[in-house]
Image 1: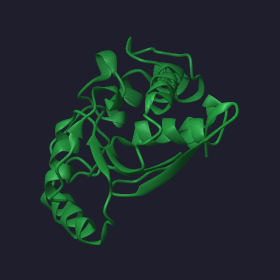
Image 2: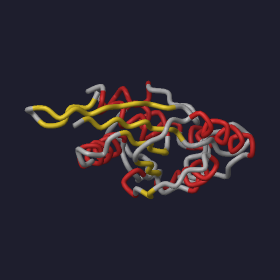
Image 3: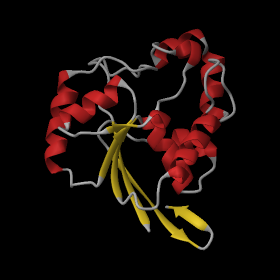
Length: 183
């Protein structure tokens, strides 16, 4: 059987446009845009979401009932949680640079890019074969990790994949002789 996932990235944080390494406050413009997006989404047999407030509010703005999926949580940013990317780059430039270039680095003490990709791969491979077409409201990092797996890309490609708020990424799995294959 085929599983078709549409990963929809949650709406952005505040109005400053500055990336916050955490589940930030949401702006009204993003909520309004999500409502408009919901009007054009096709029907899905299943809708799940990451546990963040951002994903819950996105699902609400889309007028969707979703099931919470804990495995889809965002990065564990460790001691960087709640700070902006600019703040981290200014106070820990070496650590920030290493984090963006080495998938096994965790200068913040949280989760590495490789660990995130492995977690999402486990989740993808655990989906029942009868899942069908599913909508997944999640964080951009989770969508990147799913793409890395589906494309069989090296983990180093993670930061080269851009998934803006309210963008969608589609991945599919077809069961075959060697098990499921994502693309």
